[in-house]
Length: 112
Length: 111
Image (tube, rainbow over all chains, first blue to last red; front, side):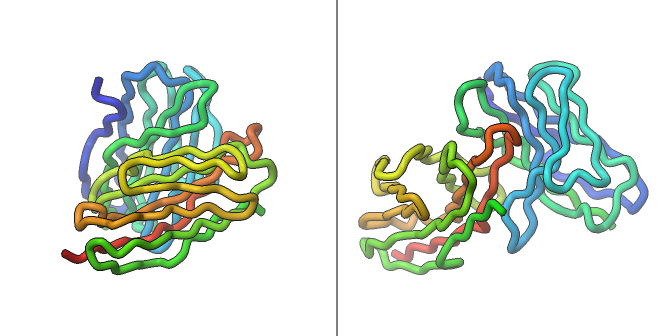
């Protein structure tokens, strides 16, 4: 049982490049979340999903897109990376009926 | 507006010196208050969930308590391995599925 895993662990992009971050969970959780964590700020919700095939915007969705084609995977896409998207990205999941979220190890993204 | 404020921002303790971390919150209809531990370069690790005022939970040297306005994370006789950032979060309106996180307290326990 690996829990929540994230790929890649670290990535450097140039401004304007695109990339996809992958989150996978093997706990059969219904809900999945993407957050970003920046110094001096709390975790901020980018997008979330309440089930396979559904997505919704969070607090800071601009510049990001997501997809949940399979229940166990939640993808975060950056179509045209900007330096302001330099951050640490965390994925989390939780089961239906329980409020506690479980987090992945994070992806560090540097946009030059 | 839903809000979570953690204090202090940073705390240095000697090994064995007990203390408390504070999490003050404003939320419309608390569905849960969560404490996480985060080590450098790692993801948040779940510690406790509290649901209603008066509730308490313990794990080893940690004890979390909840009132209608704030939560405390009490650390009894801390050890250097307790050094980490402790995050507090709340979930309010269930229709939004959103969680509000504080900025954390960085705890350093000196041997």
